[in-house]
Image: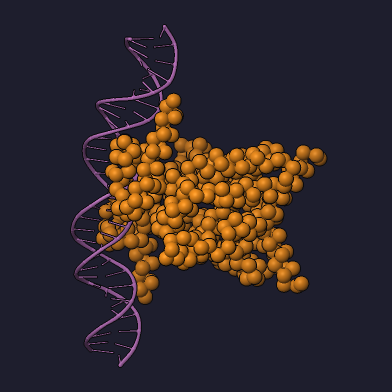
Length: 210
Length: 210
DNA sequence: ACAGAAAAGTGCGCGCCCGCAAATTTGCGC
DNA sequence: GCGCAAATTTGCGGGCGCGCACTTTTCTGT
């Protein structure tokens, strides 16, 4: 029950942060406002988030770790590791849909928020490590960790590229007009890592059937 | 000449930061002290570094980008890409030697400094990207970028592991007693990425000789 | 139900970060 | 050398981040 309340507070804080940022623009939101809107003290706010940007993007990226873990768990063991990983990640960026469209627009527009958003990608490393380790048979968790970190790095590269190209293509209509879908970009970006994932998988297989 | 003076100021600042941190311990160094020691205003200090930690670790990691670029340039084209990259990186962590031994001890001891130190690894991405792109023939800079980012991520993983294991093995004598050499750990950690580097190299080769 | 422990929230205070605009220094053409 | 433009430095002011000690809330065992 403690845990529940904690998550509730955290969510209230990031929700308030996002709402206020959308209403007045991020630069016109004081930390005090966010804390007050969530009904906690400023100090408590800082116990949850160490920057305004973090609080705002958390409203969008909150349960990504869970979602990644679920997406990996959904892939049956039959499919190759590389495909499983790549498609699990692509899933993350196809589902979001409507609710946070203007939120994403806000984030991708302001440099400070963009940076904070990109930084959140690191959060997928842990679930990815576990999932990959599972596929590899837990024989070498070290390899799983390296591969997960590499995948996260590649996703970051894809995001940066996408943000850079779309930064100039945000039209007056207020809608993002990406030059190509982000899922495609993700697949292209992750492709160079497939050989590494395949090799690890094969080696694990070899180790299981010597 | 402007550029010279700027670099001089930067170096003076990080040198002062490191010296003071070593003398009094990092927590007893005010930003004002660093600025004063370097003969500039506090505000100028903040134009160069956005945190005390950054200034301190910069004294050790300053020209890493240059060194990585040089190490990659030294490898002849004959050697495989994977080997070239791995050995170029290993070079970075075998050469340092004496001058900053106590500095490194300080950095690896304090959590805040450790984090800042680990964060500096991202700086190798750019030179690595260029070098890899060179080896791949500039046909697909995107792939080079992804591979460089992955390598950097792997190095970060190696560092984190090394820091974690050595954190508990710092003895009363004040000397680090790593459980195995860091270069070996680096090679092991980077190994899973070799297939990806090889595959990219082969593909580039195929593209050059269709 | 109650006492004590453990954890979350809070007020205070210090120092740091950084935008802004004015002052100073540097670079360049004459 | 001189003066102008560009770049760098600086002081100021506001807001933020966080350690610390303390209060309040929640959990646990009896």
